[in-house]
Image 1 (cartoon, rainbow, N blue to C red):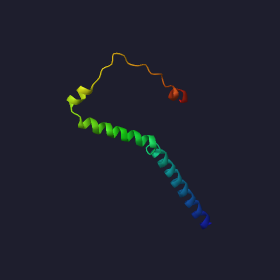
Image 2: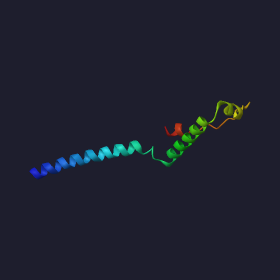
Image 3: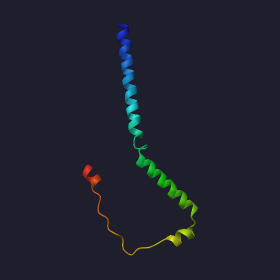
Image 4: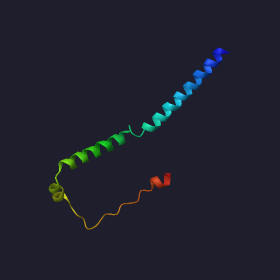
Length: 81
């Protein structure tokens, strides 16, 4: 009887640990994807370049277009939802 109780307790603790690990893995899965790493690197590079540029340089490089090109609407997120 004692051995049975000990085994049940260990099984319960093992299942709790498994659930905790699954929750952790699901919470960090997006953060470590190659596309997320690429996005973070691009954002970092843009912020670093913007911090180094002065307002005068930004104004000189500014271009204004009369017409904004129309892009096709991306419906993938709507369709999946």
